[in-house]
Image (tube, rainbow, N blue to C red; front, side):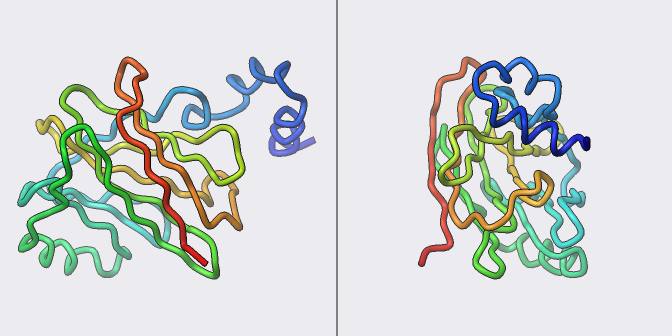
Length: 181
């Protein structure tokens, strides 16, 4: 029996599987979140073979998501942009779609204190996955995040709910993203 089939069986066994999920599923799929990745300005953060991310000190909450081949060019262009400039204690989000499904969820967060836990929940599912938070080294109060559905073998989903909570577990922002019809 493979690890995938064990997980799928555990998911369908109900409440009794909760303790097993903590052991079987990686950190991001549990109730907690992903550990913060701190990067230098303009540093490439590899998301997958198709996407990379970089954070910029210019502007307000300024970041880039692009193909690896276009990254340097997109960073140079983004240096001229004002950034996302989102409200305090909130999220901004974007999606990338292909063939009717979301292949990447990405965005920016702003929080007065600490690093948020950002959960990304596929439509029709009762629990979410932890998105990966990224922030500039020595910079507080904002960062970006990403969620790669393929890393969790999720396919065919065209709508997600993104929920951000602070270190005390209080939800401070929730967004729905969708490819639309």
